[in-house]
Image (cartoon, rainbow, N blue to C red):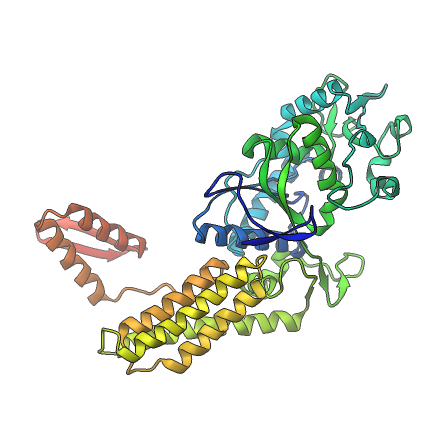
Amino acid sequence: MKIFNTLTRTKEEFVPLEPGKIKMYVCGPTVYNLIHIGNARPMIVFDTFRRYMAHRGYEVDFVSNFTDVDDKIIKKANEEGVDSAEISERYIKECKKDMEGMNVMPATVHPKATEEIDGMVDLIGDLIEKGYAYATEDGTVYFRTRKDQEYGKLSHKNIDDLEAGHGRDLKVKGGEDKEDYLDFVLWKPKKEGEPFWHSPWCDGRPGWHTECCVMAKKYLGATIDIHAGGEDLIFPHHENEIAQSEAANGVPFAHYWMHNGFLNIDNVKMSKSLGNFFTVRDISEKYDLQVLRFFMLTAQYRSPLNFSADLMEAAKTSLERIRTAVSNLDYLRKQTDKDNLTEEEKQLSKEAAGFVTKFDEAMDDDLNTADAISAIFELVKFANTNSNESSSSEFLKELKDEIVMLSDILGLTVKQEEELLDSDIEALIEERQAARKAKNFARADEIRNELAEKGIILEDTRQGVKWKRAD
């Protein structure tokens, strides 16, 4: 597997810190409103990376935070006259709904910034002790950027050219007390109506850049395999994370940095003022969110991606084509009376396996989902061309399973849940009875659980086994 590492600007062979395991941190959303489709791209992209690496046999420890203290959250809370925690909890809940709709798996841990303040205070204290940070008279704490000899190594910027990038930090109270215009905020004093926490310097809250490096270390360790997020986070957010983490811990923060490209709307940057701003919830009112997921994967993740109604319709049609192929293979299996592969089908199976290899090769090339999807469509075309009512059940099942497997790796649901027919249920009940008679209680329980998952409830009575469909 090769990954384009933003740190080195080259594709590198991925070598984990620990064989068979991956420690990955992805910056999550600031929860002050419903997530927009720009938020959705990194969620879908890095969820797909996680799924593929799990497919390859890795155990992936995947951490993605919620930024639940921020100026935008506070502003929203003040507008509504509620506590900022109420705003953040509301939109964390809504975010999780949208993630479920997009088939984004929950992270191993979803830490919240407000629950990790003690760790941030400890980090800042450590940086002050080591001479990397200083407090001003009003209690603001800054990081001494020029003390970090490698500052700028992620964004590949010259340190003397970075003043403009720190605009958001220059605006904070006490900015005039900075030793250097490049120094960025680690802790800032409270303002009227804002949430705050106690610290040795003043009552206040942490700077945004301090949050993620603390949460990454707590849940993954001082050095992690992969840190990922949107391209807009490279500078200053990720650059400042590296500075703090490596100054405090004395070891590299992350071995690989992955960043997805920007999302435009009809070739224009998404903006509320332009009226081209879409939330994931907006999209869900018109499309199955699986269509949005498919669309997001039609381009290699580092490439810019243009969102439009026409492209979404094309994604809808393409996804339906895969689903139709799977459905057709299911239909043919019910029609055939042949079970085993013929000699010709054995050769065709080898050809079909080539498309699976092609899929893996695309994904191994820096998660090239665009080419991976092309491999799925080649397999779909192959299945449509080489299957009919004369095909064997085993051959049809192989084709279907391969299409479903590759789609599952991309997080795309293409298989419809089959409803059990009454005859199927009776057959399984008979098998269960036979298993019990043979004292194969494990198989008997397995059948009961399988039926329960399908909504079939069994009841053992003196008259025999009775069943009913769950309401």
